[in-house]
Structure formats: structure tokens, C-alpha cells
Length: 154
Image 1: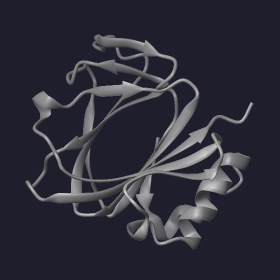
Image 2 (image 1 turned 180 degrees about the horizontal axis):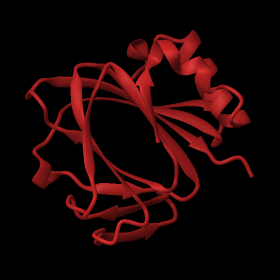
Image 3 (image 1 turned 30 degrees about the vertical axis):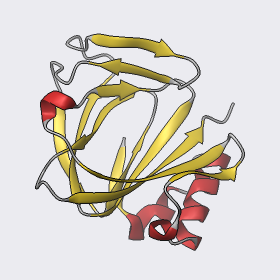
């Protein structure tokens, strides 16, 4: 997992073609101005889901993991709690088995070795081994967010 501020995102160019496409989009577009919902960037290879919401208490959240896509989770306005654990965490409990169409496995909100950080107008780039929990309430305020889905380059 890579966590940082958007001003530094260009440091991660060169990891893969699809990550480069996502970074270029972030650097050249006003993500706050995007319409709510899905916006295609490069077909199914790279797209963004734009959302506005009030985060939830931990008991209403869940960990999730993906097999075919990376998530670039970007908090544009506000702040939210963000959980992380590695796929090898023995405390992970599957609550919803892998859904191939949605590319997601859901896990209980508690694991054995999870850690939490606060994303405040920054991003987290999560890879398939990075089991993550988003939308965790920090201050009860509205959050503006973009999640860029980046297909793994084969």
C-alpha cells in the first residue's frame, strides 16, 4: 500500500502503464468537478467512481480485497478513517465470498493485525495483497471522494 498527498503522486509513475494513466488523469483533471458515479478513463482498464457521503461507524464498515484491480482511494475533501491489513492476516473472516463481476471479497470489520490511518485530502493506492477498510467516520462530516479502479497490467 502506498499512502500520501496528491502533490506527490507523480513519484509513482513507472510502476505500470495503467497506474501511469490514472496518475496522468489525477494530475490533469479536477476530480471534485466530476459527476457522481462512474467516469471512464481508459475503458475497463482505468475508471473512476466519484462519491459524496457521510462516513460510518466501524461496526458498519468492512474490509475488502480485490484480485484484478488496484484501488486509488482519494479523499478530495474532508477526512476519513482507512484500515489496512495484509491478505495473510489470520484474523480475516470472509463475510461475502469473492464476487467476480464486482472483483471484491468482503471481510469482517475486525482482523488480527489491522492498522488505521486518517486520510485527509490524500490518497491510498492499494494492491491485491492490501486488504482495506474505507468510509470509517472520523468527525461526522461529509466526505468528497474519488476511487480510481486500475486494472492489473498482465
